[in-house]
Length: 350
Image (tube, rainbow, N blue to C red; front, side, top):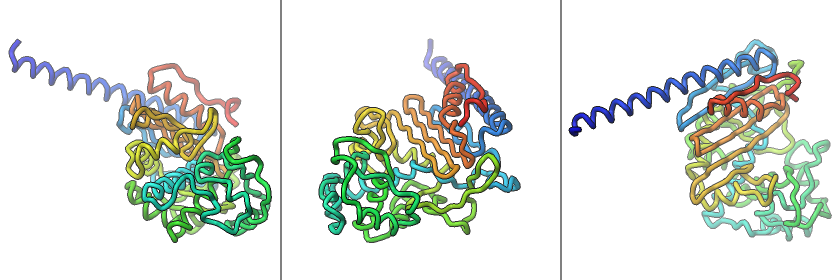
């Protein structure tokens, strides 16, 4: 077999395999689009979705309404609240400052806020990142801003448990992480995110704590199409489009802001069935293998799922929460893997 023939055969086989894969991906994308259309028509999904498989984006879809008026269709330019996934920004921000030598995960909260009660001398930043601080949940009935929450923390005399001895997922840990970033950098947290994280990640459309006057913000609403406000008890919530969310996910996997060692610190929970700064995931050596994080806020619901072994990322953003984002992701993965899947049903939604 001469070299010319071998070369021609190689090119033919490569082109054939690439063409076969492209055809298969297009077929799978068509099945996913049909699945999402059916879910929307059944009143079980309203939102935007991005799906990458084998490192290539194969689905970018906006489906449903941007607000409760039912007059404005969603487009891919709309930004969504991503709930608890926004906590990734303060977690990564903390690790950035540690790499810059401006703080240590072993620092006590009292180092930054010496006027807090004695419990602040026991809690480390690492406790805040792993939700093992012993802090109670925010008193949402009375907290209507950061100042209200500071008052509650100033008057808190006893933790729920000794730091490091147990786990309790709550937003007081998030609140103090963001406040520490402000204290160390001397700038508001939202400004820190915009300047040092979004731009560095190639994100141009992200917004922190959107106001009613901001455009292209998907507004959340319930099944009766009653629209929520945008008010949140504490500040610091980043809103993204699906495209920008994908950039952020890639940034985490490619270590564009923090090192693999820092990433491991905030992607590995302290114990099974627990969360940490990046939600949860796994690493092998200096590579992120899996990364999963979900979030809810008002009637928003979001899910990010990455599986590096398949070059796969699934991002689901909804502004009419049905409690079924994991069901949707499971069906999408089944389609991508060529397996059977179930359509959504009202009985299966929440």
